[in-house]
Image 1: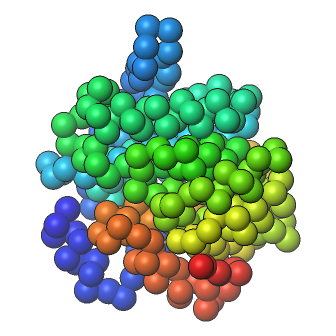
Image 2 (image 1 turned 90 degrees about the vertical axis):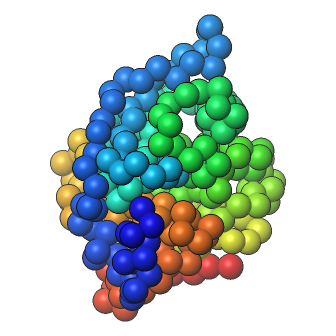
Length: 269
C-alpha cells in the first residue's frame, strides 16, 4: 500500500484513474456471519485486497428494498485499490434509525476486536458508506459517535423531523456523491450538506439516476459508465481517507470532471 500511495502522490489526481480497477487482486467471501449476540446475526460479503499490509475497511450499506448484492461490483472495485470492503445486509425496509444503531455497534465491535474478520484489516481505520436510506443510516451512526474516520453518502435520502438535529452532531469528514438532481431528486438530500456543520463536500454525477449509485443496479434505466463513476469515487474517497485522514485527495481528483461537466455543482464547507 505504501508504494501505491507514493505513486498516487506524484499526481495530479484524476477520477479517470479510479474508474479503472486497481492493481490488487480481490478475494471475495460471501455470506460471512456478523454476530453481535446470540439473537443478532447479520450477513455480509467481504472483499479483501490481496496485499499483506494493514488497510482500512469500508463498511457499505444498501438502501431501501435493496440488497448487499447490489453493491458487489462497487465493493470489489474499492478492494482492487487496496481497501478492504464489507457489504452489509440489514433489514432493507428499515427502520433506518435502528439500522444506524446496528451499524454503529458493528463498527464498535470491529474496532474493539470482538469481530475477528481478517487480520489485514486496520480496525482503527473504518469508513462508513451507504446508498439512499442506507446513507441516512451512515449519517445517523456517525452522529451518534460510531468509531469511523469518515463517511461517504451515495445519493442520500431520508425522512424524519430529527434528521437536521442529528446531522449537526457529525464531527467526522463526509463526502456526498449524488445523482443528477435534474434526473432524480431524493427525499431531503439537501439536508445532508446543509445541516452537517463542517468537513462536508458534495458533488453530483451528470445524467446519473438514483439507482446508478448502486453497482450492479439491476435496473434497466441505469448506465454502467455512470455506475463505474460512483465506484471510482468510492475508491478514491477511501484511499484519500487512508492517505491523509480527509477527502482532499478525492476532491482534487474530481476537478477534471468538474471542468468537463461530468460532475456537477461541487461545493464544500
